[in-house]
Length: 255
Image (cartoon, rainbow, N blue to C red; front, top):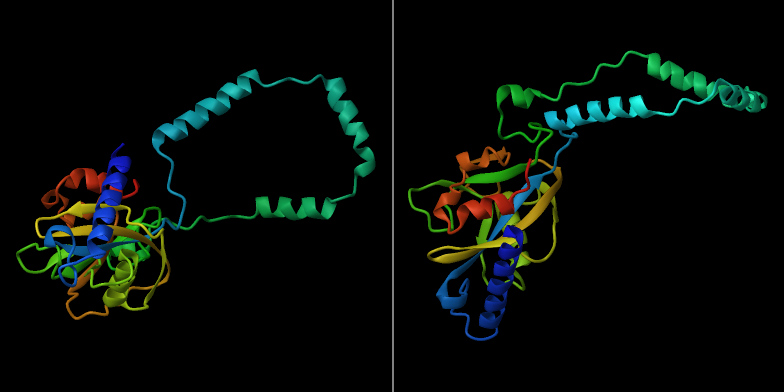
């Protein structure tokens, strides 16, 4: 329901913007009621390794296996002997493949650690951390959302300036923040959510990292970090936004 309400709100805001842009837009970046329109970009790195299943899932798998073992069928020995004799003529076929896989299974295997050097050093600038979680890019510098107090942590963003679409504005926000250092895949053309702020309206777009490494392209960027959903509230203050808690839980994918 939260996702539906946010999507409906974003669609309504987009329709209001389209109607306004058809006439007098009140200058660059102007939207309905003279508010600035901001494209805010959620750059996310998808999990690299499969997350560990929760404890309850492991317990259920153990219980399910043991229960199936209790009720599994016991075939008569005569039936098994008949099946073995019918396959006797196929002996020798695939023996080499069987020997290969037997050797593979018997070979020692050391699973690499899920924790990397970046995890040990708590290097939040590295993409090689928290490999089993989604990471989101946040920048430190002047924010367009009208927050006071100097430099703040925020997502890459840009004021709408008569681009063909808000999606194009989000693409230019990426180019202005880190140039072509990251290869991105934009998920859809429409915003995934929006936040009405006192002096502006922010439209959020989602983009996934396909390759590269972050290199700042603007001097105003004082710092950057790749953080998980649970770490994000330490950087971005969602409480200052209307319905900020709902926005936080609906906008970001659970870990």
